[in-house]
Length: 391
Image (cartoon, rainbow, N blue to C red; front, side, top):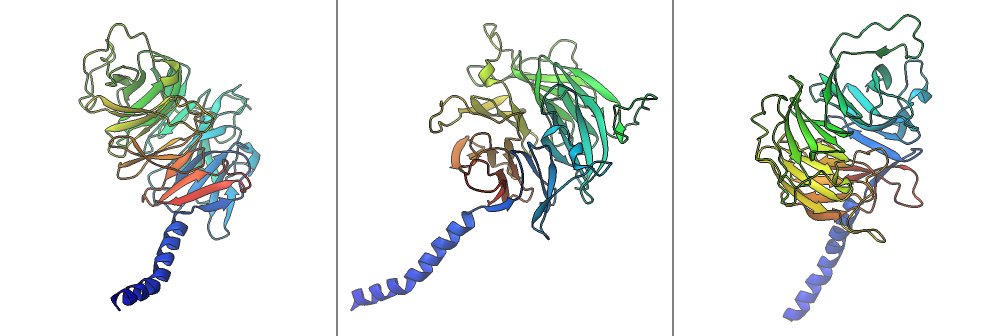
């Protein structure tokens, strides 16, 4: 009799168990925002997590409109959607969510890039600024500074500064172009990426040369305060402040120099993209061979090789053309998401791999921590668009 009741209870509970499993699986399925043309190169959420924008390789900057379930393009001053000549690789919202800044490289890399500032609500361009041949771009969270890296220099642009008057007869600029005041920072070698700390006081610069690939600069003084040796065999990146470069920042310690036998950073370990953690103490670095989290307060680092994909080497990963936005932190700093040839989720405390998503390209996490956005170009047969994953 007891066995009969157990079997009956199991039969009664089975539909509920199946429903729970199905609900969980459906909840993990991403939602597709279709209708984009070209490869998605950057994705960003507004500070309130309610607005999502993206750029693609066809040079369009677009905003998702939930009311019509479609993407709509931002427009330049002359209402032309073809005015977006640069291939945008980084998107930055202002803290109030009203302005969107975009920067990157032109598709042919033959001429200078231009920073853009857009009105998010109207999708109209407010102004462009400071033409520079720039593969690296970021805007501080306080909206005061923009950084554009080029060759062995970084232009630190004052977005609140007074624009210089254009020369008479200069028709090469857009009518809404502003040449804003800028301070030039001279870094070690070719600049690959830049990122402002959350407090907007420190700028991290990833370079393609010695000594170590990652430099920290004080935004107010324009002085280098520390250099991180990311290629140190003991994985403790550190280096002294260069003589004459200014006093070290107490938040960025100055440990002993690396071994004299170290002759530079191997090309496969040079920073391709960097992203500060929300706590402002750690910074994630993506290179072709490694994923690294560097703690700027202790000068310690965690480093792992990229996992092996089918038919690929375990030591290298394709990060995407033009330094796509391939790193994103969860708001609580517990998780790090990486893109490139495969989107993955990592535990930040030990860089253990938690999940692979089966898609590639750029990544973005909503400020409320509930949604991960990725591209869907790795899924054959699907229309081009953006996937939204519940976290």
